[in-house]
Image (cartoon, rainbow, N blue to C red; front, top):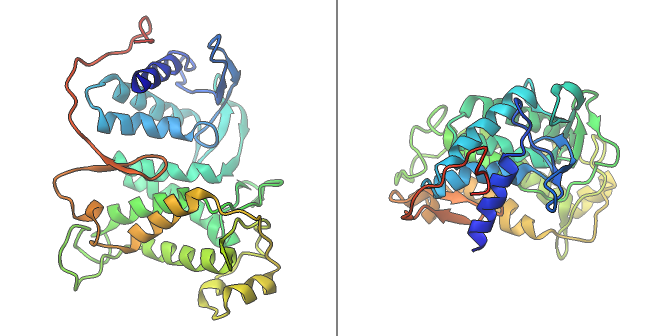
Length: 317
């Protein structure tokens, strides 16, 4: 019954998209079905909605309308919420014609990874490269970054060890193997040949910076003051200082917390990026695995039943 309720809710949101633009707000009153926040974008309060539309189609293709919904939503974002290689927040009824919030949120970094599921390798790589420019400038990705004025946005200088950037990096790494470097894919059993791509450098950089800047004696902690002075600089990878000394030298401060997603997602995606063939996800040639937004791997199992098609009239199923 929970699955049915979730699908009904998705279809109810679908029929409330903005006409002509195919955009969605970020908050809706579930009692009357009216939008209470009309800001639209791929970041906070909406990211998982887009991701699960396409992943529901992959896992449950019998629900044919989910692919129709996703294609329209994806087109709406591309046409009305994209500026070059960046994605912005807009009013769901006006798109790029209205006020545009040109702020990159760290949660937006999931999007290039989702595009890999669609075979959109080139636009995915362009956007992720833009995001990595921020990461290289600051060492760690902040929660919010003003890409017009090229600075941290307001109080968005926290780095809570989020996984989205490394998640997209992992999927682009897999998709790029064979384009440069090794011609063998992740299922190759030839351990003598490295499974390389240009994205391995980005993962290696992350491995060093996360360890040196967030390490604490009892684990890893969110970093408070992300900036070019405190956390930025390529010497993090090249230097030999231990994490404690590096943090003291840079005046790093931390929140007394280690988010659960750091273990369940961030570290998992880093591990999988460097692990070419020693796990079932890379060796299984019989099943297609898909990650949930919490990085739990699941695979498709055929489900019998009659497809339910959504229309403007029967959007509630």
